[in-house]
Image (cartoon, rainbow, N blue to C red; front, side):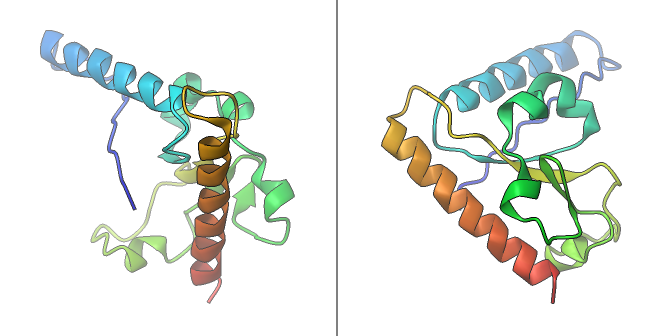
Length: 134
């Protein structure tokens, strides 16, 4: 799996340096959304304004209707043993942390590449749900 960490918190408490990093990260996120490669996203409510999940993410309730952790566009990780499985020492994950899958829309990548990556993301999320349900 290819993992990209793109923090998009708007915290400007560190002044100009922090805002420059924020602008750079926002550009990187925008670029990723224009490509059809990275289809899964881990986000929280702070990022919703930029990600616009209702418009950009697939409705997971339609894909995984029997999963109790799915609500709308997100697989919410609070209440699962996700933290333990990934070795997160803090224990619990925040209530608003979720995994989503981008809709397979027209991107700079070919339609086939985007659809193939979307299908892979759906299968991967199914595997995560299966692991969390054990």
